[in-house]
Image 1 (cartoon, helix red, strand yellow):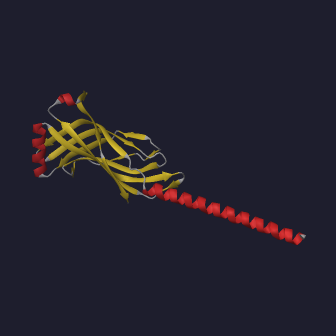
Image 2 (cartoon, rainbow, N blue to C red):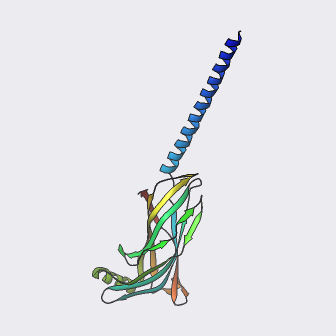
Image 3 (spheres, helix red, strand yellow):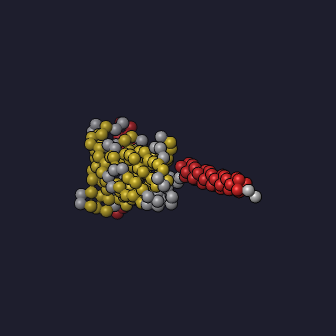
Length: 210
């Protein structure tokens, strides 16, 4: 075999190696893309639990005015072991029969790592908030019978994080029912002039594209 033939043979081997490396590279890239697509399309949504509600004020006065001062403890758990969560914005407020009764409280931006738990304890204020007359009547009845159902609601935006890749924004909504007893004090702990209700109530959570 001549030197020319040997050189040609070496070139063919180099070309074959490059093609093999390129094919392997393509498979690796495709695998990464498939993983990212799966991760972004199928992350488990965070799990929220309303741990407790502390009532500092909850007064209904004429004409149809409600003043409330609450502090809640809300926990969130990231159930994903390979996906982080950036909470870009979270507003929390209280409502009664779908009427907002406190101003929204914005909690700080938070990154939640794999399987991490985050706890927030915001205050929720509503000073002389006007309520619809039919709601005022229903709320008065509920307070007189001793049990009021409030809903602690969370609205905001989050992003998923896989490795160094961060997704676009997703909308998150959470609804946490809080059953507050105003007559049975055995269900609450007195904290100064306030009453603290231990609830440990699971919230419904919905995550969708923004």
